[in-house]
Each structure stands twice: as structure tokens, then as C-alpha cells.
Length: 145
Image (cartoon, rainbow, N blue to C red; front, side, top):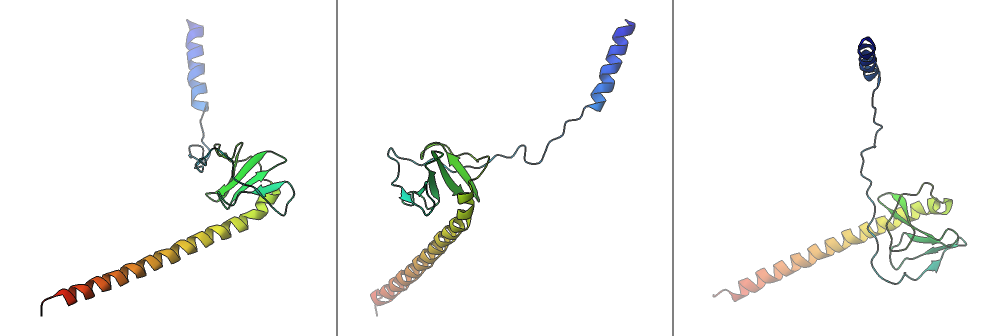
């Protein structure tokens, strides 16, 4: 009985010494791009770097490494890798040097897309404004005098 009380007291003391700490980001859910759809892989175009290809027809930031037999894609401000062109995307442990040099290019392409979308949005607003003016003009002309 005496040992049992001592054992319980020891457990209580040890329980007070054990702490659980969490590091920042431990519960963060990492966002990954969706897998591409389709049965046939996209056509590959060679890059200036031997062994690296791009599939611009599918995504301007999609790259294939012939040496590693891996696909890489830039999305959400980071590089992802996949084992198949239409597979699930993972954050790589190490990003190849060639791709690190392509980040600026990928960002420029995103900016180009954003600029294009903004221009198209402005054009659409202009078309809607003209249509509104034409409709108002037609309504005035249709009014009995």
C-alpha cells in the first residue's frame, strides 16, 4: 500500500512536468491545385534547359523533368510536384534550381493574365454601357409624341 501511494504521487509529479507544445502551422491545411482532367498528356515543348519541358497549352507554369520523371507546377505562390501530369499535387521537399529561376517568369505570366482579365472586364463594362445608352435611345424614339 505504501508503494502504491508513492507510485501515484510520482505519477502526479511527472504529469505536472510534461507539457505539450505546438509549433506554428501544425494545424494549417495546405492548399494544393486541382488535378488536371483528361486522358492524354499535353504536348511538351522543350525549354532552354536540357531535360526540362513545358506544357504551356495546359498551364503556363506546368513543367516536366525528364530526368526525374516528375511534373512541376507553380500555384498559390509555391511549386508543387506530381508523379503524373493529371495526378495529385504535393509540395516538394526540394525545388529544382531550374524551377526557382522560373518563379519570376511564372509571376509575370500571372500578372499578364490578371491584366488581361482586368482589360476584358473594362471592355465588358464599356459594351454594357453602350447597350444601355442604345436601349434608352430606342425607348425615347418609341415614345409617342
